Amino acid sequence: MKNAALVIAGHGSTRNPDSSSPTLRHAEEIRSRAIFSEVVCCFWKEKPSYREALGMVDSRDVFVVPNFISDGHFTRTIIPREMGLDGPVTRRGERTIRYCEPTGNHARMTDLLLAEARRSGAPPSETSLLIVGHGTGRDENSMAAAGRQARRIAETGLYAEVLAAFMEVPPLLKDWDTFTSQPNVVVVPFFLSDGLHASQDIPALLGIKEANGRGGNHRMDFTRNPHPLRGRQLCCGRAIGTDPGLADIILDQVAGFPMPPASAAPSS
Image 1 (cartoon, rainbow, N blue to C red):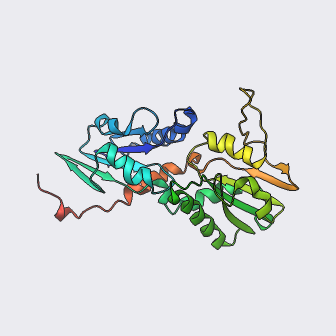
Image 2 (cartoon, helix red, strand yellow):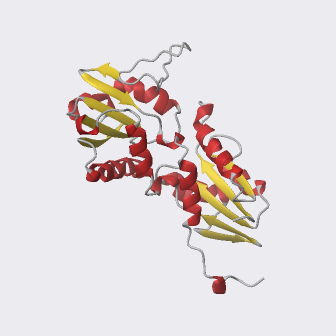
Image 3 (cartoon, rainbow, N blue to C red):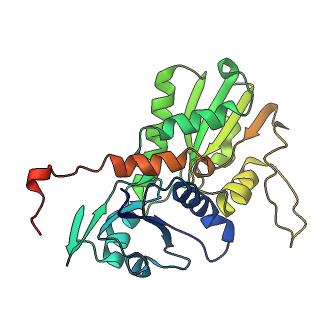
């Protein structure tokens, strides 16, 4: 990979600069390992844009990794369209661009969710674990991703109860106390940043009020768990995409890209 470039494609936000921070941190970590000749980020809602990304690198071999939770509209349509990609492999003159699987598809995302849940300190045998997704009729894959992770964790038998919950569709997060049964409830946002959803919207739906002193908004203080609410001990974790281990998942998505055998490589 020494002569290749890595492009990490995130979503970004026009409302919250924190949205892109984890992606930028993961890129910096990968850059520090000197695995690629170039490592850059691009975003849908921030600069640099997807359309600008390939012009920012000079390498002939380029790997693009979408830093998205699910393989949906953005990964299948928006990013390929904006970058001019033909499919998994795009050849443009002497350049080869390989479009990798999104980070959320990686099997180790389950390990990151479990690690965040364990940070709560709640005893698993007396805990309901909620994996929280956005939930929207516009992208069913986003809902499926959270549900899939909840089922995988439930199959381990580590927690008394593991469920998926959503901000906009049933089971609704705001009703968390009606469909959980344990004295401890641990909530892990299946999001890629502690943006507005993870740091403000989710705590508000849970009933947690953490004043930040700005314009009446509220922002989660992740150091103040647990919260005694509705007769339970409630713990809210950080968005899974903030885990430093995501940098290794990005690298795994590159390493797992199916490369042609040397004999099949085109001659120069």
